[in-house]
Image 1 (tube, rainbow, N blue to C red):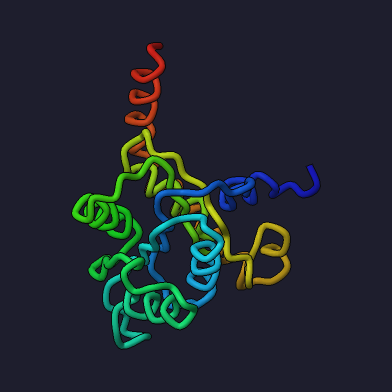
Image 2 (tube, helix red, strand yellow):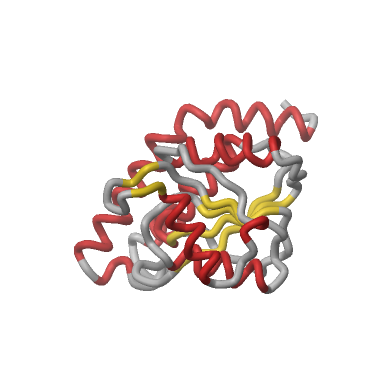
Length: 192
């Protein structure tokens, strides 16, 4: 252990692994450009046949987050027909629920999904999509380390506050899901 707060780093930030091609590249909503830049690069690298940015109206953007993210992808050469639309989500659970609905409506079969998001949001995003999508779907996360990441979050007050807020949200959002996850895991493994 390098620091006494390493457990917080491990809670909030998903440990990245070598990415494998997926059936969909998911981008939970937001007003930052970097996650969509990364998602577009992954699309061009053949890591997924579709991008699914998600997000409803954002007053800061004066339009939907989906429109903002779609326009970034289009400017980076992603064909419009490869960008699926979810423009109603108001929170992360909406992002996941609505994205799953859009995938089903478009007949996209998903066995592996890739989530692209800000690094300090990676654990909460992953756990949200894991909660909503069928448990057979395998997820990987590609993190936008642009500002705040696992190696620097403790260097300034703003980043510390972001990460501690995420840790609180993780425990608050998912505590009541734990019994369901245990039951589902035991059922699929045949143990109890």
